Image 1: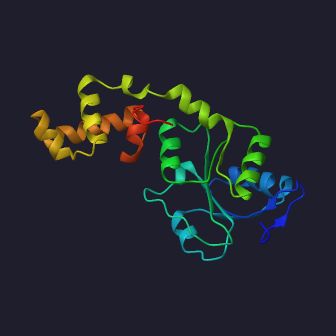
Image 2 (image 1 turned 90 degrees about the horizontal axis):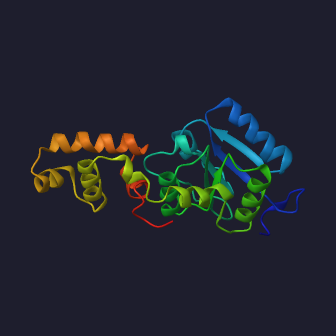
Image 3 (image 1 turned 180 degrees about the horizontal axis):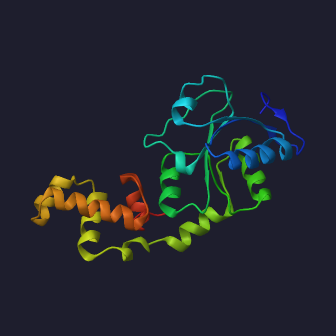
Length: 207
């Protein structure tokens, strides 16, 4: 990584853009990233603000609760590294982030040392996750579907296969409105917000 300076810990010093709108988390991340690890950090409050900044960056980090429905990452800088972080990340979010091709997934319940190792690995061009990520997937695999009623699970499985609400209604002999209401109930019970999270939340895809 000849284009990057070395920090005090011997790893690459990253120019990091972070999407985070909470003041406390900004303070904690600033102290950890800048004071402890020697990285340069620039904060943004909204995806729009981040998207419209064209400065080169080495790493983009996004708080999981601010992830846009359509992932948009800038391909600026010498290398392109993208990471998501959050508190007690659920398996659906983790699987969605993996499928989206992110370089790093960091859970705030892991130690600062684990975060430092993960960031250093990403700085060296590797894909890295903090320990709780794999543990969450292992512990949560297949449990989501047990939260659903029989009909909700049936609807969810058809949605995972790519059926539209109208197609599901025709297949099950019910109205499209009923299917949409069942879909909302499925999302609520599984704690997800988008269709791309559904398969992971139900344990229907591997880690």
